[in-house]
Image 1 (spheres, rainbow, N blue to C red):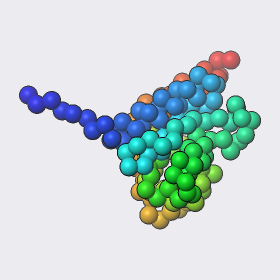
Image 2: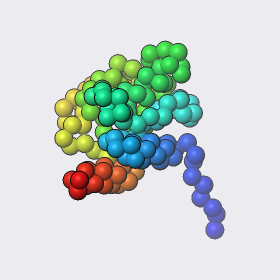
Image 3: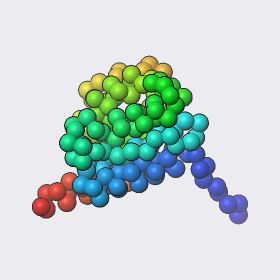
Image 4: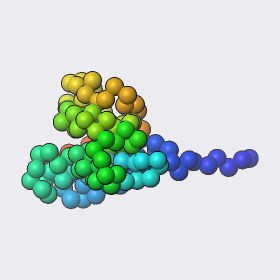
Length: 153
């Protein structure tokens, strides 16, 4: 029987890295959203939510990652990049993703309450490719566990 090799540059591979960032957020008592941005299969930004740490409602993982990626590339447009995020971006983040002209967006779990798909489905640049549901169960489970732990306190 032939061994099946997993592409190290697959969406699942990078989403696992975003999940590692989300776990760091969880451990820092931040809402556990993690984000990775890649360019030509190389990670150029790795972040998680910092809203509590920075006392800044705009310090979402995606915003932090876009800023870091633009700095790494020396330009504001990220059309050759892919953003991996564990939870569907909110409207604010979708706007920033749109302005950055991100090439691809890959997200894990849906966010029925605040996700862009329900409120601003055209926020992204028209050429942005969107892939949803990558490691959806793992991403959703981390969020559920976080809020469950908050209710116990």
